[in-house]
Image (cartoon, rainbow, N blue to C red):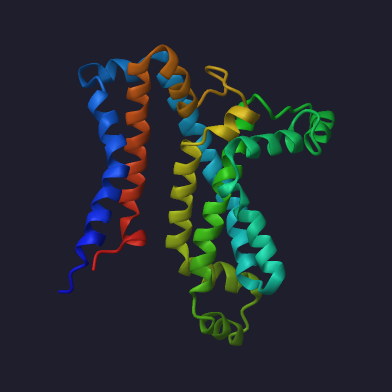
Length: 259
């Protein structure tokens, strides 16, 4: 078996240490004997319930919007496809606060769309649970699109061609041939979107605020607790780390299959 140069191995160890040391330091400071008491407090349970609820709805909404978008992008090529894909992926690399500000100017009470929604229905999205879901969906949607589109482009086009020769229409090909073949990617994209929505901070606090029991999700509660109750912040951090690890481990065969 070929071994890597010693310099590469040393850099790999240093890189691993750079990533793992902060996490280990955090776990070292957790007050484990009081962990359950801290997690069971009203502030934590309210934030946890809101985070789980909003992230699940955001993941479902991201799937509902992202899968059709991925199907469309998988059929496009050229400059138009590149521009469309860049716009879709942009929320992944935007500073979260900028994303929240963009949502505010689009869907806020005086926003481009939000003002019309408020006038017609009386629904105001900012500083509400709906605003939390909208902000989470905005940052989670690109993960669904990228995951599903990659799987769609890997499908052998002869399957769809064979279905069309059997007089299957476009709906039958899409829902009975194509989508079943990318079901694992759809599931993976949904889980990744859920995990991303669960950990969202910047867009949420900018667009939906940080109101305890109403819009304060777990990451926002950690931010507040760091100033007033560091042990509670550590306990909530353990919850978020545990959820992230569970998602990564459950999807390990997709992202790093064992040879």
